[in-house]
Image (cartoon, rainbow, N blue to C red; front, side, top):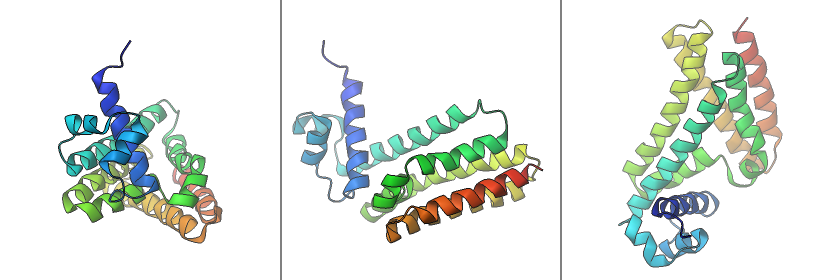
Length: 190
């Protein structure tokens, strides 16, 4: 039985995201994306008229991945556990982060090089993640302003650690900062 068209579009978007992360968005040709997705090159143009449309699909997939993760964490019993789960997302991907950088940070930077509009759209994924983290800090009793400052700090530090792990080809910065941030988060709930 043939796969539904939405499956093909999702495979193309996933392939574009993977190639943008591994090779860079500019170097991911339409033919490369089609081959990586296992579809005919002409199919790409059926779903995406321009490379910017492909870029928007990449942003959408990134957003879906992070929203999906935050939804999985909502059943964790405390805001501290949910924030620590965010750190776990980075630690679980430590080998890729060491080799390629953080998927969100790297792909956002790649899209921004291609188009300011795509860079801004990718920045909205960061904003949503910061908003989610701020909500967790609000649940811990912080004011909106303090919660937002803490959320920004959390994301900035883990992103910086991811960048250092990549630049130094070492998992140590990511592991060290995640451990430090976990202690900081757990003290926040006291």
